[in-house]
Every structure is written in C-alpha cells, then in structure tokens.
Image (tube, rainbow, N blue to C red; front, side, top):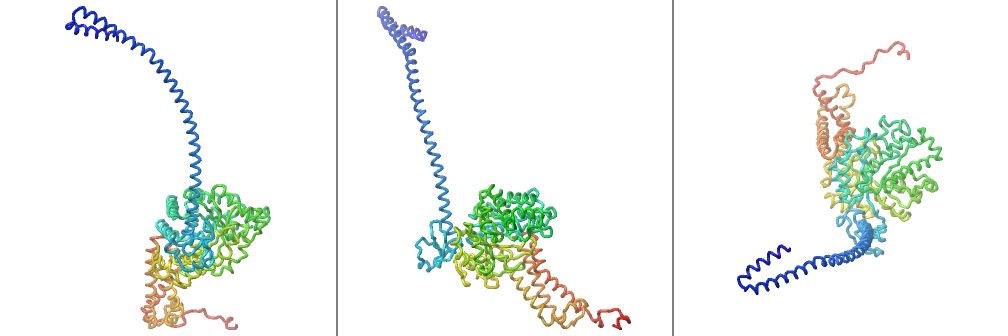
Length: 639
C-alpha cells in the first residue's frame, strides 16, 4: 500500500510541475502528502478496530441465532410430536373411514347383484315401518346395516360367499379369473377356495401335489386379481377329515386314523399334527400377502376316531370322543391364530353334539365361528332349530347352502330348482335364527366338485351357473320368486331354467359346456329309454344274439339306423365337449367325464352296431342248440 501511494505522489508531481510554479508546487506536494498520510492512518485504524467491532457483533449475532435455533429446535420437536399425533389421528380416521365405507358398501356389494341390476326398488317398501334409509329391496336396521331385512321382515345375509372346490375339475387360470369377475358381478363378496392338491406345496407335501397343480406365480395371480376386484378370498384347508388327497399315498398311509380308510388323520400322532401345521402355514403365508381375514379349517365328517393307538391314548386323556374332537379343532385354531390375525371358521357337524360346558372347557367360542351347513330342500328336517340352539354359546355364526354338487354323487347335469328350494329354505331358517346370535355373519354358497377326493365328478361349474344366479336372486329378495327370476334373465341374457331342466342361448363363462352337458344328459336319457323299451331292439338284438351272432336280418335292418343315429349324436357331443373342456379345464377332465358318463352307452352302441353288421352279412345261421352240454352219465339219469 505504501509503494502504491509513493508511485501515485510521483506521478502527481510530474503532472502538476508543468502547471504550477516551484514554490506553489512544494506547498502543494506537502499538503498532498499529509492528506495521503491522514488517509492511510484512517485506513489502518479501520483495519485494526473494525474487525474487532465486527467480530464482537458477529459473536453477539451468533449467540442470538444460537438461542433462536434452540427455540426453533424446541418448536420443531413440538411440531414433530403434533405431526405424529396427526398422523396417528389420520390413520385412525382412515381406518374408521374404511370401515364406514365397507359398511356402506355392505348394503350394496355384500348382498346380491350390484345395483341397479339386482337391488331393484319395489313398492312394498312404503309399508315398512322402519324409517332408515332404504337400499333396493332392503332396509338397514342400524348404522352398519345389520340386520338387513326385506319389507316382509326376512333376513338377508351381509356376506355372500361362493365356494370353489378344486379337488375336481380345477380351472385353467384364465377361466378361473373370468369366473372371479363373473361372480363379483353377481354380487358375491367373498370366495372360499378349497385348494386341496392343486396348491403348490413344497417339501414333504410336494409328493402329494396334483400333476396339474398351479404354480406359485399362478396362485399369486389369482389372489391378486381377487383382491383387485374387491373380493375377499378365504382359504379352506381340511385339518381333520377329508384328507384323502394325502392319506391315499403310501408315504402318508401310516398317519391314517384307521389303516383301512384314507379319510381321517390320526390326530394323536405328533407327526400327523406337524403335517397339518406345514399344510396350513404354506397356504396361509401366501394368502396373507394379499389380505387374509378368515381361515376355514374344515373339520367335518370325521367318520373314524379312536382307532389308531395315539388317538386312543388321547381319548383317554381328554375324557371322551367329543372332548377329543374339541381338543384337536381347538389346537388347530389356536395354532393358526397365534401366527396370523384371522377369524377361524369350521363346519358345525362335529361341534353340535357337545355340551356348553365342554365348549367352555376348550374355549371354543373364543377360537372360531361355526358354519352350519345343509343342502336339503327342507332345512327344518335336516338342520333343525336344536342345532342352532346347541351352538348358541358362539356369538357369531354362518350358514352354508349349495348351488351344485349336493344332489347325488352322479348328478352331472342341471337340476336348478333343487338348489333354489334349498335357498328358499335358508331364507326362512336365517330369518328364524338370526336374533339368537350377536351376528349372523353370512351365507357361504358351496359348489362341490366331488363328494370327496375319491368320488366321481358332480356338476361342473358352468352347469351350476344358472342355479347360482337364481339362488342369489332368491336370497337377495328374501322370498320365493315362483319362477320370476327377472334379474337372472337380465344378467344371463336367457330365460332361467325350470325343473328339472336347462335353457339355451345364455351368456356366461362356459355357456357352451353347460349346453353340451345338458344335451348329453337328455340324449343319454332318450337312448336308455329306447334301449329298455324298443320293440325291435329288445326282440332281436339281445345279449344272446350278440354272443351267437344270431338274429333276423329283417329286424336288424330296422334297428341299425337307430343305433347309428344315437352313436353319431353321442360321438358329436364327445367331440365338442373335448374342444370346450380344453379351453377352460385341464386335459384329464375330458377323459374322466367321458369315461364316467358317456363311455358305457357308447361302448354298448358300438358293440350292437358291430353285431348288427355281422348279422346283415351272414347268409346262413347255425342249428340249435348253441350250448353243447356233455352227455349225461348213467348215475345222472338215475337222479
């Protein structure tokens, strides 16, 4: 800085020297130097004093800011606490809102067809004394819509579930998903899936899995779709009886309750219980990822108990058959509830014979909710009021009806009115008993594919769809409809069938299978009538004629066209069925269905056709007798 100032002075002197006299120049230079010196002193003072002042001010400012920061941190903590409180409040509010929305939807989706298709208005509502807001044919009695009553006072279940039984005729995944969307359209709000051997079990159970079983990715696709379309999906895993799919195998035969029958597992055997635990956990873990509020443990039709040594010991320890049943069902329910936050369901028939004290001893009312099932047309006979009263210690109960698979093990064709009458009877039964419990939770409409794992096929799912729709309409309207199933007609785009029969021209998934199977039944019925009563056939195409190729060509020529006609019809139906089955089901179904329900008649027709053709070709026939007996002995003649 000093060097720069001196240089400036010299330049200034040179410039001024040309303009001022020497004396004045000296005076000017001295004044200028003094001025510069004063400026330098001021500058250095600012440098030495200013930073101190600024530093002190900065320190004070920092102290002030530090205090402010402390206050702000305290305020931030307070705000954070308030935000967390708000978040918790928001979570609670969202949960309450979800519950409110679910309750609101319960009056719509939980009952029957989504409006406006199914819950149509009717004039009878105006006579209803209850002034609560009405929804379609139903009025809510309290805030959450329970109980839902028709204008006549009949009970309508808040939950309406359908049962998919995969131990027979399991669906290919695309058809499975199509059916899920369809039943949602019907108004179903839950799906009870009985996977049985179609679930991709791992480890020890993998050897029992069906060769056509779904992959884990396919199961997840099914569950994800169900979740997306607003259906609750509930697994059903048998844990007592109906374990044929496992116990039929040599690997697990030693776990049978009775070595002769692969139905009931030896519940006293520790290895058997470990197998059940593995089964339950593998299914539940997959379901839990997509929302699982209920778990059905089966536990019905325990036909054998107290045969295997381990169960005999357990019967003695528990003090009897009924108590041992409660012990096993209770421990299965407890095991699941400890691992998963679910409500356990179980069929009622193994619970109904026990006393109230026995239920209390095993805390059954805290462990599960019973599902009372009956598929008969007269529930008062097959599900009497005494059964409900025996289970009154339970706060909540369910019912189970049927739309297929409950009208005989060989019923493969449509018989809708049997199932409609079952649901008409359920309307009366539910209306009578719902007041006896805190809550009648809902109705599960079962659709059995087989009576058990080792039985033949019942109705396939497409065959039961019209009966399903008519049954749902009956439940939703809360009364017999006497053939006037208007909403079913609108949905299926066809006239609903009447007893015993079937209809045509409908629009629903698998409709062509429905038509072909019912056509098959009626053609088989016509053939059997012809076979047992036709004059010419029975007179000239007998079993004896077939064996000896011996009959009248004149009558054979009359019979052969009829044989050809019936055979051609059945062969055409078989061909078309195989094509349709391949679209929606696995390959084995076609062979099983044809072998069970068509092959005997087709084989008989082919045999008769072959004999008829041989007789027509024959020019001459043998002399009687055809049966050659050995000559009688003298001793025989004496007799």
